[in-house]
Image 1 (cartoon, rainbow, N blue to C red):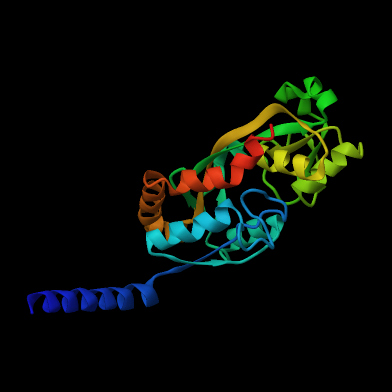
Image 2: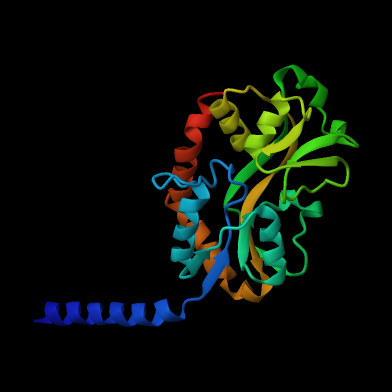
Length: 249
């Protein structure tokens, strides 16, 4: 009898907790699509493997007790939507911003995972771009709407995606571009168009860039990040999406 009472009490508590948390838990609107070629973080039209961030973000939000709604937008509209408050957060690296500063409208979470980007070029031109200062005043391939901490130092040549950057290098439309390492190496292999990683352009961590009016949720988000790091979830997803890239190098 005592076991039945205890079980009933536990079920009742769970039902009450669910009823209280679900309707009242905040819904955060976000966009993780980047370009349509932001592999391995976002992979469109791939239900079984939608991308590292596509899988990780729902887990993080669930652990934090927050509902999320992905609103697919191109990169340039994502930034505008965040500035206006139409979106609540995105996933970015402070290393993409001048002085690592998100500005007064945002707060940032603890680090989720590392991300590095390099100058990419054709293998025969790797030495030419071995020093990051070589980009000053030059036309450099970039992705439309993406943020670059030093784009006042070079001339942007915007393309719609990282995939198009690789193609543009081989069509001699540009001599160098900027891309995340995993993304560039994936598309180089996929397209069978060899590239080389030259000078490092930025290195940092992916974090939540969260609208300041949502700052009260930051402790729960940080706890969720810590928990999924501790139980190996984040490392497992990183390995799932990057192992095949690393083994082709």
